[in-house]
Image 1 (cartoon, rainbow, N blue to C red):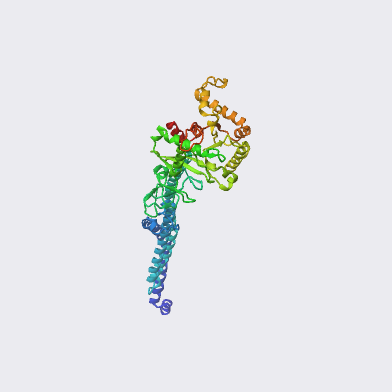
Image 2: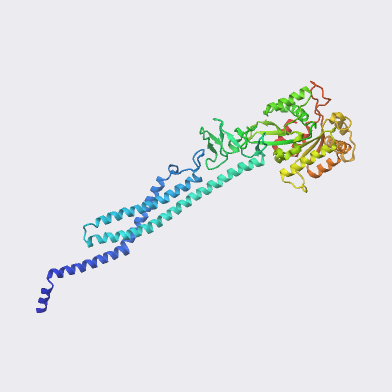
Length: 529
C-alpha cells in the first residue's frame, strides 16, 4: 500500500491516463496505417486509377477527335488539309496520350494541395492518416493509372494502325493501278518543244485555268480529288475519274500539251536534205484526212498551222524545205468515250540536225514507237550511209543499247521519188507485178503476201543497184523489225499549182502500226483502212 501510494505520488493519475491513451492511439493509428497501406489504399487506388484512366482517356479522345484544330502543316504551298492518315492521325494519337497522362498528374497534384492544406493547424494524429493515404494513393495512381493508360494507348494504337494498314493497302492499290494502267496503255504527255515525256505532267484547273503545282496523283492532300489552291475546285487524281480530260502543260518549259495524258504513238522521220520528208508528210496526211472512214472520227490537228502548211504545199505542188533543227511535231488527237484520248504524232527534223544531233538533244528518239528512214535515189550513197551511221549511233546512245544488241523498234526504209523509176520501184508497177509473181516462195501465198514479197525485193534490188548494199546489211544487223517501201509523194515532176498525186504513202505507217503492241493504235487504223 505504501508502494502504490508512493507511485501515485510520483505519477499522478491524469499522467497515467495520458500515457495509456497515447499508447492506445499509437497502436490504433499504427494498425490503421498498416491496414490502409496493405489493404484499403491499394484496392481503392487501383479502382480509382482504373476509373480515372478511362474517364480521362475518353475525354482526351473527344477533345482531340479533330486533329486539324491543333495540327500544323509545314508545307506552305499545301493545296488543302492533309489526309488524316498522312500526319494528322499520328498527331491526334500523340495529343490523346500526352493529355491523358498530363490529366492524371494534374489530379494527383490537386489532391496533394488539398491534403497538405488540411494539415495546417491540425494535430499529428489528425493529419497523419490523410498524408499517409495521399502518398499511398499517389503511388497507386501513378503506377496503375499509367499502366491502364498505357494499355488503353496500345489498344488505340492497334485500332488506328489497323485502320491505317487498310487505308494504305487500298491507297497503294489505287496509286499502283493508276500508274500501271498508264504504263500498259502507253498513256503519257510529250512536249512539242523540248520533247520530254511525262507520265503525269502538270494540269490546269478547268475552272480558274491556273496550273496546279502539285503532282495530280493520289497523295497526302487527296485520294480521289485534290482541291485547287486558287478556287477550291475539286480536281481528279487518277485516270479512272477524269484526270486525263484536264488540260496539261509541260512541267519543264510550261508549253501546252496537245491534250491531257493520252494514249501515245509517235514516229520519227529521218532523212537528209532533199530526201522528201516534207513531201511525204504532206501526201500522207492529205490521204489520211481524205479517207471517208477518217472523216467520221472526232479529232483535233495540233498545231493546226503546221497541217495547214502541209496542205498548202500539197495543193501548190511544191514542198518547203525543213530548216528547223528541233523536230516539228505533227499531232492528231482522237477524242473518244474512253478514259483517255489517243494521240498520233509524226516528228520531222531537218537533215542538218544530224551534223550535231547530240547538241540538239532530241528526246523523242528515246520513246518513238517507230522510225522512217527516207532515202533519196538521187543522193550520193556515202551521204546516205553517213546519215544512217549518225542516226543509229545517236539512237543507241539515247536508248543505252550497245552495238552487240539489236534495236527492237520497227523501222521502215522508204525510197522516195519512186515515180522517176516506174519500171523498178513505182508502187503501182510493184502492185501489178505482185499479181503475176510466180516465185516459188509465194506460190500459194495471198495477194497481200505476194505484194509484200515483191515490194521488199524490188526495193532491196534497187538499193543494191545504187550502191547501198551496206545500208541493207547494217539495217538488218541493227534492227529486229524492218521493211522496205517505195513511195511517190508528189507523183510527177514539181509543177507549180499542180497538186500532188501520191502513191504508197500510207503503207509505211500501216506497217509500223502493225508491228506495235499498242492495241489502241491498231484498232484505230483498222477502223480507218
